[in-house]
Structure formats: structure tokens, C-alpha cells
Amino acid sequence: MNDLVFNPLLPWPVLVAIALVLVAGCVVLAVRTAGRRTQWVLRAAAVVVLALAFSRPGIPVTAVTERSEAALDVFVVVDVTASMVAEDWDGDAPRLDGVEEDVSELMEQAPEARYSLITFAATSQTVLPLTTDDTAMRSALDVLRPEVTLYSSGSSITSARDHLVERLEKAAEDRPDSARLVFYLGDGEQTSGDEPAPMDGVADLVDGGAVWGYGTSGGGRMQETRGYWNDEETEYITDPSTNAPAVSTIDEGNLQGIADDMGVEYEHRTVGDAVSYEFPDVDRIVQEKEDTTQAVSEFTWILFIPLVAWLAVEGVFVARRIRGLGLLSGSRRST
Image (cartoon, rainbow, N blue to C red; front, side, top):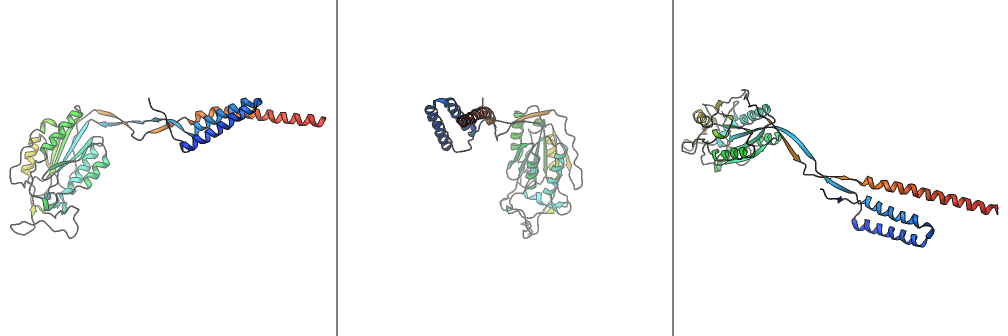
């Protein structure tokens, strides 16, 4: 049961002091005027009720809203190594531009699913946990940045595997009946010096998804990343052996291997290609959400009912007094 709360129009000390003074005055007058004692007692009671009304009593009410969403969790895993800003998307745009465009189009096909964004370079992280907030996902995609070039020391294209499996297992525990999809987006360029580890364990936890590849065989140059978005003065990454601008090319063989490990299809993405994925038929989940900002249902109006009744009674008393004064004046004139 909700507790009673008050939101007084005046500070409590002021409100209580005024009420006590008025009630005390009514009591004193009730004692001194025996013939009108009932009126003053009623007035004292009216002061108490009015003070209660000014305290604005009420009961907190928590609003519970229902929201329907699909029983579908979509994990988007994005490569944010330096090669993903190679300028071979739509001419000379960075590959991450293509990633943002394709994921945005994917979301339009299943707007009621939950989406999560995971990025990886030397390490992997969850940028956005599972959410149905379309705006949050688009904002996270809009601010995707590659790793800082100064700290880049080579990375594996499967470095997100452990983190991804952990998030998939957690999602399966929270919603065992939901379908889980993984979309891996990258260029397949392995720069750690070792062979990429297999993406084992993922296939058993997903119901579908895809591996999307970005880049060209001709490759593209990469601007340095300095912890903020590149400006006109930013230089291109150079190849230490030749001191010429380094060129990143797509490795579709590696990407196909990741797709095989995950049990999904591989697709090379190019500008203008429509995103077409057949999402599984899933149930709908109705989520109840309590509003953390509680409103207060006031019942001050109830207290005004006896006050109105008191005013009516007070009007009767005043009318009688006026009538009595009129009769008294008339009798004096007749004498």
C-alpha cells in the first residue's frame, strides 16, 4: 500500500502556526460566547480541515506502461581497427560509412527487435547493450571511430569471439525463447601476425545472421586517427618499409572462414547493394515498465466538501443574525 504524502502550499512551520492561532481563537470565543458556542466550534473544525487542504495530501501513483517487442536479439559486431577507415567505399569514403548505412537499413527491416553493438580492435567491448531504442543504436553507429593509430599494434579479426559468446550466453539466459542473430562486419584483414583463431562456440548460440565484408581488392589509403575525427591536416598511415601511404585490402578468405565457423552466409558489401535479410518469424513479448517518476494523486478536493457544507451552515447563521438584527430594530422603532 502506498504511503500518504503531503506537498504543503506553505512551509510546515508557517502552516501549523497559522492553524494553531486560528483554532485557539475559535476555542476562546466559543468559551466566552455561550450562545454561539456551536458556531465557533464549527469554525475551529473548518480551520483544521482548511489546514489539511493546504497541506495537499495525496498518494504516490506509479504508472505502468506496456510495450510490445519482438522476441529477437540482434548482435552487430563491427571491426574498428585502422583498416576500417580505408578509403575504398563509394569511391574514397571510409569503410565505416558503409557499415553505418547497412546497419541502419537492417534495423528498418526489424524495428521491434533488440539490438546490441559490439566493437573490436585490440580488445572488444559492448558499446550498446541490447535495447529497443532505435535512436540510441543509430547514435552509437554515428559516432563509431577506429582505434587510435598511435596505439595500434596489430589485432585479430576474431578477437571479439570470447566477448560475443559471453553476451550471447547472457541473452540466452535472460530470454531463452528469443531468437539470436549475429551480424559480423569487417574487412578480414589480420594484422596480429598470427592466424585468426576460429569463431567456435558462436554457431551453437545463434539462429542466424551474416558476415558482411567491406573493402576492395585494390584497397584504399587510411588516415591516421588521433582520438577525434580526422580533420584536413591529418596524415595518412605510411608503410614503414617504403614510407609510402599504406594500403588496406579486403581478405574475403578470412571473412568466409568466420562465416563458416558461425554457420551463416558471407556477403561482400558494395555501395548501392540493398540490405536483404529474411528475419525468422518470432513471437512478441509484452514488457511492463514502471515509470520511475512517480506522480501524486491528490485528494484535496475531498476536503473542500465539508468546507462547502460549513459555508452553507455559516450562511444560515449569518442570515439568522441579520434577520434578528432587523426584528430588533423594528421593535425599537415601534416603541
